[in-house]
Length: 114
Length: 116
Image 1: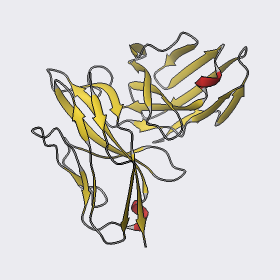
Image 2: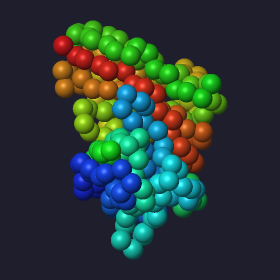
Image 3: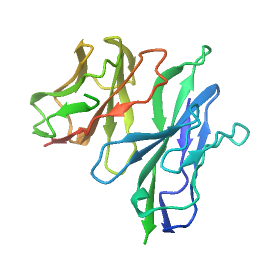
């Protein structure tokens, strides 16, 4: 079974402050982790994935297999970062490709105050 | 065209009705997905189609019947639904199909379904 836990339903910070959205996962095999974001009245979209190691909109996330975590971080939050953030997991098969079954965490609503 | 489109945007149906949701993508993606999302909850996977064949059914009740007529189109046929089936139904697609589905999933805007 695969499970994703986002312990914070709501997170509020001020503009310019650092922000960290927590994500922990449980999976017996090799996981592929993602962060998806949903801005107000927009569709769900990919923010970043651990395999690509990219930094998108100033956000980064590192997969820590020892702590089974994939926390999302940004050093200086902006008001436009206010959104719902979902951490998601897809299991990797022996060939290193993904099973395609995406399991989402409960989501964290980030509010960045001016 | 780099979007997943879904029609209708809103649907209200009675428990004895038969209706269908439609999803379309023209990105050449070979995997398509249906998700159900209740208010303030994460999306829950319902079905995965890979290369136009059903590859994952997450034990969804038979009153939901998916169909993939071609690689660009995905339907979800609804019959004898219950009020608790009211939700936002999301369609998504990704570049590759099962088992190589570790690509970004592109989501549609969803169909908001209300069962009365």
